[in-house]
Image (cartoon, rainbow, N blue to C red):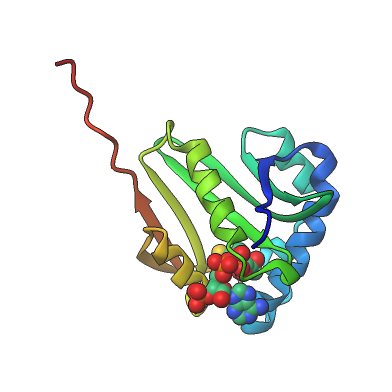
Length: 164
Ligand SMILES: CC(C)(COP(=O)(O)OP(=O)(O)OC[C@H]1O[C@@H](n2cnc3c(N)ncnc32)[C@H](O)[C@@H]1OP(=O)(O)O)[C@@H](O)C(=O)NCCC(=O)NCCS
């Protein structure tokens, strides 16, 4: 990577580009599982706008004027549910996915004690990426269409507070 992209909170004006990047990125997953109806591919512009208007953390990676990646996290109780990590196909393999992942974790870290996400159980490239970032597989479940998903978790170790 030359100049690293800016990782910044998304605005409603980003919705169209998020939709475009998400759809382009997830095509390889759809091909791997022979399922064109994966949720990131069927999500509509309206649903993305709704996510942007709600409490979810939505971040984007920008290189100049171009949106090249995005990620989201929803906090429930002590858990941040991370999802929709996507990098434009021509920009993959340059460490942008890890930048987005670390940024969304940092944005939620003061509110949670663990991060949870899932990916296709056969998506070795994704599993490698998440393992490198401290996630471990804690379970498996089928998605709505029967594809096996690996559920991964990363627990935050917070520094003990001392009054001394
Ligand atoms: C998963 C994803 C976000 C990773 O982002 P990234 O910026 O490419 O991440 P990295 O640069 O760290 O590359 C991750 C790995 O993919 C490899 N890679 C990247 N682009 C590739 C490509 N087109 N073909 C094969 N391997 C590729 C990298 O070499 C690296 O491999 P390694 O684990 O052996 O080192 C991105 O590949 C993507 O958008 N994938 C499609 C959507 C998806 O599956 N999202 C995650 C769902 S849980």
